Image (cartoon, rainbow, N blue to C red):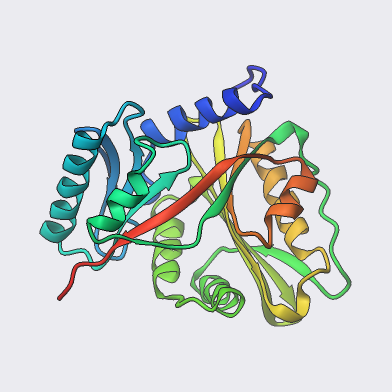
Length: 269
């Protein structure tokens, strides 16, 4: 883990594709990563994240359609309510997104893939007045984390609560959760996945409630997690960023490597 990280776009993207996609690790207890045909997918229970994380870079039209059909069948066979194909802008064939749509997948909003060498990032935590940070340690903290996430993103908190509780109970060494608190109220939450066997840690969440946005809470959460990643010897931080957080991350030293779009398949009942 002590080798010098590559600095150019192509090299960083190649490292990311190899370590985080083609040789992906399970993102939680009870799930597994499978290479089947031309794709690598994660498979778990219905409440886990299930989907394709990598497809062969030489995938052609015929093999792409066959791979898509196989993943749809896998989704139906496992009884999933939802299955995701995580498509990156450089994936092939060039019309893979259109082929997923034709097979019944639905495209969500694209996000920007950003990566930064940990050594290049600020790790000093600067907080606005009235805010303190604390790590997520127990079930009560998980409830606060899920509440902050729901209020910041307007998303249901059920799946996040389940996943974080499972990580704390069964794999706490590869997970960091953090809360930003204003008094007794959670105003932001974030998490970091530490991908053992790779040089990468992933930043997730980081949503802040409306009244606390623009005051540096998000930057403080990034610095807090970057410091922990550095202490544990990880070389890179990776983020799938919304347009709200992308400019902040670029100012902090992250490099844009492309975009990623979730394509979701939801079987009809």
